[in-house]
Image (cartoon, rainbow, N blue to C red):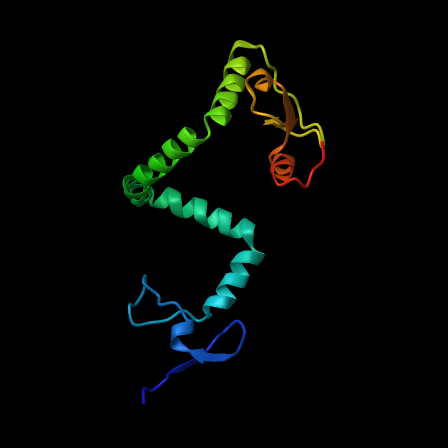
Length: 156
C-alpha cells in the first residue's frame, strides 16, 4: 500500500493529498505551493483585475519567451486551423460571399456601419438571409445580440 502524504492548504485550511497542490517550479523543484489548486482557481476567478495586471507585467518581462511560445503555437495549430477554414468556406460558399459583399460595400462606402439596433453599442452586420439578392440586407447587432440572434433567442 502506497503512503499518501497530506498537506494543509493555507487558504481553505483543509488537509489534502500532495497531488492537490501544484509544484513550485521557480524556487524549488521539490516544493509545493501553500494553496491547493481549487483555492488558487477561486482566487484567480475573484481577482480578474489583479490577474490582468500580473499577466501584462509577466508578458513584458518575458517578451522573448512569449514570442517563442506564439511561434510554436502558430507552427502547431495554424495548419490545422487553415485546413478547417478552407473546408468550412467550401461548404458554406453563400455565407462567405455574403460576408465578402458586406466587407467590400463597407470599404467603398456603399454600406455604413451603424450602432446595435438593440442596445446602441458597436455592431456587426447580421444577415437574415444569405441569398444572392439579400447579401447587403443586414441588421446591425453588437456581438452579444448577434450571438443571440444566431441561437434564435433574439427575435428581430
